[in-house]
Image (cartoon, rainbow, N blue to C red):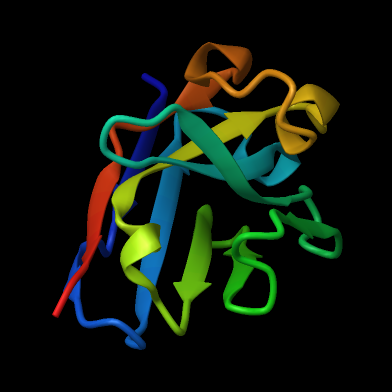
Length: 130
């Protein structure tokens, strides 16, 4: 059974930090690109970061560049998203998704939907508020 499970969300004050984790099982996790996307209340999905299978190529949306860092530990079949300098605008449900390929349509914002990916999780809520 394929599973993608996000964790680490919560309530944090502006300027604070959180680290999200994404654990995958039931598929060849080390060979997949892993993506983080988010959905703020009342808005559509926004792609925010991606990492290749080897962990040596990463991409970030302009909205999080310089504040968020994606990394992976293939031995643990886990991808992390370190989020620093959080802002209220970062409040959203954060989803982890996996695909065998780099989805250019996703990272360019042309087509951001969970259905674009091979697998995805149920999400973890991040709320940034004082």
